[in-house]
Length: 111
Image (cartoon, rainbow, N blue to C red; front, top):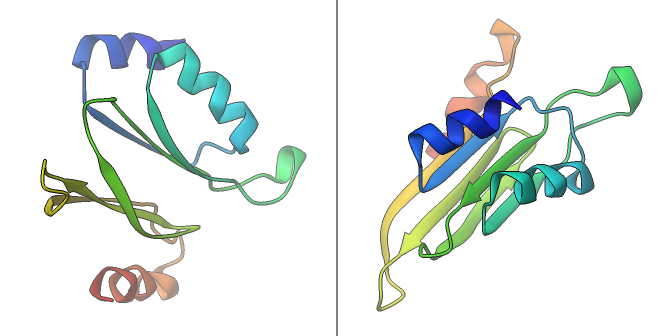
């Protein structure tokens, strides 16, 4: 698995993956193989060869992240400090493929 090698080499605290075309049970297997402690999944759409989308955010156990919002196109979380106040934010985005829909992602970010 090429992803496992990349995760090991980079040793990132947070990993955002998009266009996975996987459902949560499949992503759970990947999470375990990668040795990640925490996760948030957005299932892909459709079934079989017609699957599209799918988002995942993995993070290491020493981080405390709180979910703000999510959709088929984004995951938005805040990292919390020791006093449970937000100290920074991470937003993973999977944009719309069609030019006429790209404004929707900006509307999402602005809200």
